[in-house]
Length: 128
Image 1: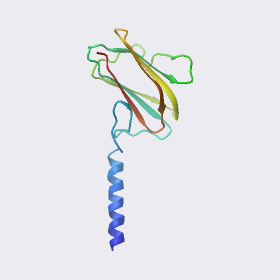
Image 2 (image 1 turned 180 degrees about the vertical axis):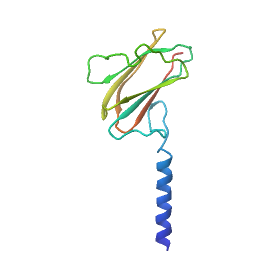
Image 3 (image 1 turned 120 degrees about the vertical axis):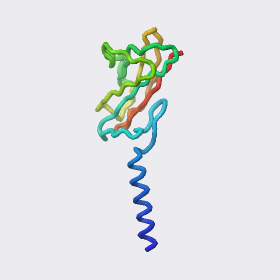
Image 4 (image 1 turned 30 degrees about the horizontal axis):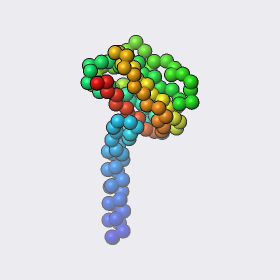
């Protein structure tokens, strides 16, 4: 009887952890925050937390081994302060560089972050 109760407690704890999404996320790479991400893909979330009311005008993300930034992931759109944008990718389990360009020409970047499959990678950018 004691072993049955232990098994039920372990099963209930496992179900609770799975239902909660396994953790939160923050500045930098993080957990899924309750978002389902297929095992063979990764999601990149960029959040504009600017204090200067400046929109993000361009977002670039390419493998770290690349010599160029590639095309702007936002296209003609902008990302205003307080908003985020999620990008889906099947290219994961490798190192990436990320660059954002604010509309006032302030540039920020993250180099050599590991984009793990099955994860939501969240980055918060601020322009003071």
